[in-house]
Every structure is written in C-alpha cells, then in structure tokens.
Length: 98
Image: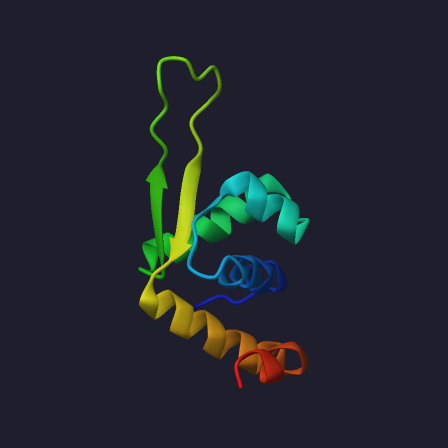
C-alpha cells in the first residue's frame, strides 16, 4: 500500500468493521463520512493492489434500482489493513487486535 491517507485509514476501518462481510460503496461512504469520489478512488486503488475484491450484485427483473458494487478485503488485505491501522492509529487498534 503506497499512499496511506486519513481517508484511506477510514475506508480500511469500515471494511475491517464489516468482519468479513461485503459492503457496498454507499455504506462505506456513510460509515466514513467521506465524499463518494474520494471513497471510490481509494477502493479502486485497494482493489488494484490485490487487497480488495469487488463484485456487482445481480438484480432480478422486478428490481427497479441501479446495481450496487460490493467490496470485501482479501485475507492479505485484512492482514495489511490491521498492520497499517496498528501503525497509524495505535490508540484505537492496540486493544482491538490484541
């Protein structure tokens, strides 16, 4: 992970907080209180680095809304996110990962 900004740390926290479940982009935006373009750029960077998986949801014929894209940390992404958060936000992550 080359660039680790405060918004990146917020996104990593949101993804780790999902405890292995997928989150869609809007949920991450709400959780982090960051702008959509900021969050999606971070998600793109994490996915490009192999730390995140992404998939589009399947909609039925009755669904009358846009598809959502779901995101989940890979096992390597979980380990790297925990490491980065312990280094950058030790006051919050010391107890959470002990």
